[in-house]
Image (cartoon, rainbow, N blue to C red):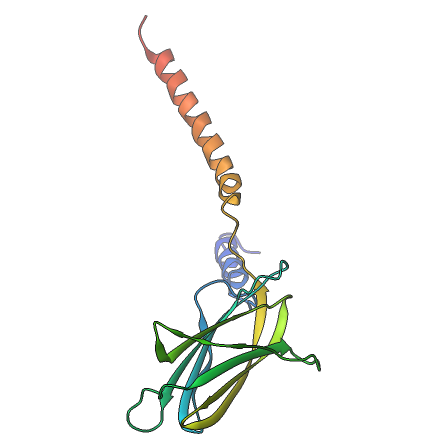
Length: 181
């Protein structure tokens, strides 16, 4: 190897190892799994935050946004939205819940379901109302909520607090040593 060629070589290695790879976990805001799907008299969007849990709490969240394909665009009262999930690749029965309007708006519906393990789930949204029937299907990968528990914050901060305390102690000791007697 020629002298001076180590820096470019190290730079190339650093760049190659810092390239992003595939990430399969979800931690963040809701994201769309269905967008602009037109069926029946509706245009459907489905957003999700698919957190799975071990304790049976309903943390798989789904928001359904509806528009009428005609005028007016607000779906009529009496429109019912059911959200169903089941583990992908199984013949398990669907877990279904009726979505509730958000802030009383038929066009924005919310449902929360139990996703009892990590993995892929099939999602089905069925709409029944004065504009007829409509269905949208998708899938989502459920993951455990990756945010740390609030109590873990202390554990994560502890090394920084210890280093800060040691540094402050060192500064005080140096100041005392520098004082004229």
